[in-house]
Image (cartoon, rainbow, N blue to C red; front, top):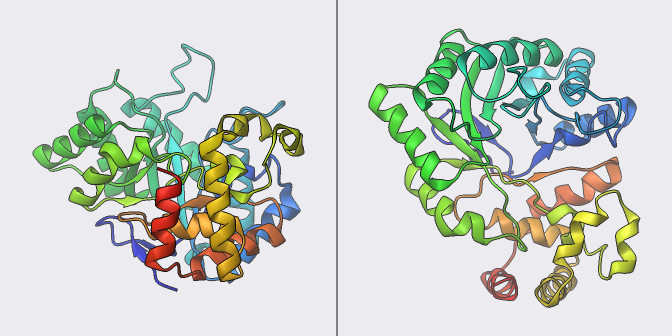
Length: 318
């Protein structure tokens, strides 16, 4: 399997990352452990989570995903085989509590909380979950620099940043001699292309940033399981898929079906393989709630699309 660099960090990942938002939410402890074992034993290595996962679930306060990953790391002894990516910045408390954003004070506290939950002494990739316009970039990047000097963080990345703000952050790092964001985590898939392709992709290519995009299957739409409004009740995520059920969405599914049939693959595998083939994409982030589902998705990393097949999918989703 070909591993791809995460910017200039010295870290490299297999061409798919596992999205840890499901751990402790739609995947219980036993299932989460099975998924992580199958992921790593299959030759993959980048596990992406965040401190806020899964604060949105009833009875949850955030940190549930990190805690389960930490328990698995302690039980499995596989810390040396994985890259742990987590995030800071989204609210971990009520408004006004100061438990959000990218201030030095909150970053210093949040990283200790994440390290404790993850049961590790370092985070391989620490990401700004959201841009924080209220905190100077100099303060945020200096705080990350301290963590890297202390060995608590190996590399930093950005998520949900505009091209203008990402460019400002990179320029600030260069001007002050501070560590720079080596990765970007944007929304990108066959159904959601424009926000990334218009400005972020050219910037990432020019600056050599690794891209680990989220919603690689467009909330499950690109798996082909939702083809009419009657299908939306199949999953808790069905409501988020409704916007894809239009002429363009159905055209994308038809192209996925066609290529999948030619390759003896599934639409989900083809959708991910198309992303892996795009310039600058390092590893799409995918989630699964069963080992069988993960093994299907993992097949995308071994699927080779022809140039003609890539072009057909690109045209269908234009």
